[in-house]
Length: 104
Image 1 (cartoon, helix red, strand yellow):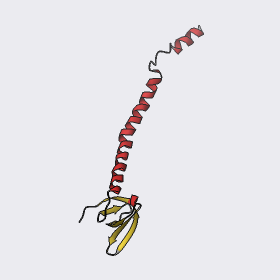
Image 2 (image 1 turned 120 degrees about the horizontal axis):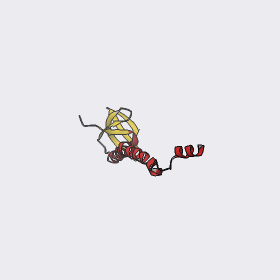
Image 3 (image 1 turned 60 degrees about the horizontal axis):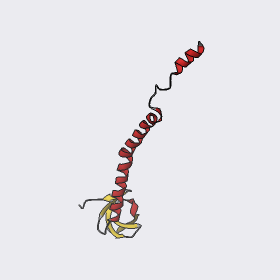
Image 4 (image 1 turned 60 degrees about the vertical axis):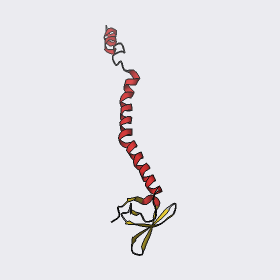
C-alpha cells in the first residue's frame, strides 16, 4: 500500500512537459534584453567616440573629461595640445577628449 502511495505522489514524469528547453527560455530572454538595452547602446557610443577622436583637427573647440574647455592647437597620434586661455596650453591624451563644443 505504501508503494502505491509513493508511486501516486511521484507522478508519471510528464507533468512539467517543458523539459530542459523550458528551463532555458527565461535565461535566453534575459540575455536578449540585456543585449538590446545595455550592450548595443554602449557599443554605439564607443563607435561614435572613436569617430570623434579620429576626426579631431586643429582649431576645434573641445571639452576634456576633466572639464577643461579649449581650442586644439596641435595634434599627434596620442596627444592633443589644447589652449585653455591666452598663452596657456595643456597637453591631454587624445582619449580624454569628451566631445566637441560649439563655437561661441
